[in-house]
Amino acid sequence: MKMDFTIEIYTKLLQALIDQNYSFQTFDEFIQKPIAKSVVLRHDVDLLPYNSLVFAKIQSSKGIKGVYYFRAVPESWNEAVIKEIASLGHEIGYHYECLTTCNGNLENGMRDFEKNLNALRKLAPVSTICMHGSPLSKFDSKDLWKKYKYRDFKIIGEPYFDIDFNDTFYITDTGRRWDGDKVSIRDKVNSTKFSQSFRSTNDIISAIKSGSFPDKVMFTFHPQRWNENMLSWTKELLVQNMKNVIKFGLVKIKS
Image (cartoon, rainbow, N blue to C red; front, side, top):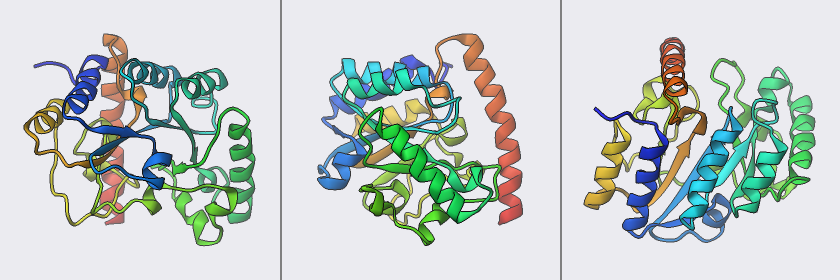
């Protein structure tokens, strides 16, 4: 059996989408003028930013683009990587987790949000944001918007608020698997239209090639999970499997 979550299989996934004539939009573009048959390639840069740069370069070589959300923490925030990804034509966004870092305090969280957003905008244009799930935290940073409005900061979109997921299919590699809803704490969407579930990237590629894959899609990738090096690939597999056990228990407790 071929390994999944490698750069090779990721490249084949992109090529399958290209061969089936999908358009590739940044989230900013999708919010403003969605194309009927289009894909948003969203990347949550939680760790290992150079892995995201590899993704960005592969996309650029194929003439396509995506959106990259950076956290305001050292393990994500690499200014050289942010600038280089932006220079390749990709969208840069802020992966906020302000209620986690500020222990649920809304006022402090808002100040933290504005400070980090302004810092990121010194490196690249930023018009969209996306919540970082922080699965082990009891705070959901989306709750920041129960009191404040992100549009006051010239933000035009946040995926969890501004996409109709009955119109756009959402698929994420959360948990280092494509059917990870049972181990996902916050990376979930409400959809009554789509019932498709995929176990492997090859399953997704087969659906794309057969024409049974939805026309409008948002993918979420965590590039630190995708590795060609066997040692890195195995480490990520083992660590993520342990995390999934913990998250599965947390989901059970909250259900």
